[in-house]
Length: 268
Image (cartoon, rainbow, N blue to C red; front, side, top):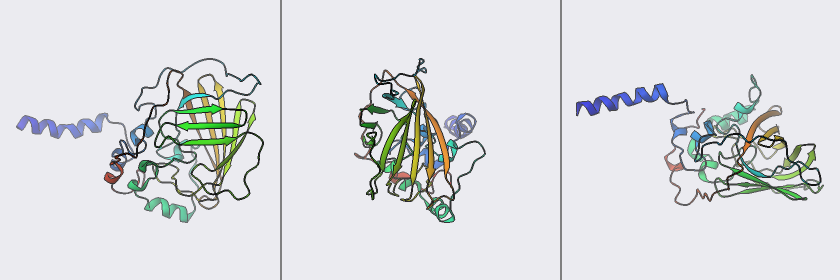
């Protein structure tokens, strides 16, 4: 009995020495609801180990358009959007937005409750890009197998789009970059697990650049005068997973994780 007690007492000390830092005890509780915060803080380690990076030149379609198709993995600064900003930058939240941010509870994260991630947040599971002459589709493995459609047929934004999780997205190509302009978001999704908010005034401009065969650089310009005093930028890199397919993952069935999340969000 004494030996067992000694070993049990030693375990926390071992964990302190060896475990990587996580946002909080509440964050660690998320294991299956939506996406894991452990995966968010170490995106390369999830249900699959990251393969070696694929090398080769940037591929193009027959008409010369950059070929973005394939299964990608990488969701950017999922735990805290500020981690995707240039070094030394801080989020320029308005006082109203900061009040909302500080009051948010971990259990209320929409993504942890199996709802769509919105933009620019992407769950830390593989996602596929499908291209056609008129549309680009993002198919997400995580949560509810949600999808996002981007119109590349030259249309303009709707005059008064209904607010949605992924907004009204129109795109065009600039060399090896797909530029996506999106408005018409709802205010329901969180930017990250930390709980950074936004309003329906959110406007994003994303640039998806295929740097080479295996690397997709994603740069997002975020404009939301309702929650931030000035626009800001974040960046992340996704990697090609050429030998993988999207797997079925339905998180809302018998989902019991979110109810165990107690306290404020991970960084509050």
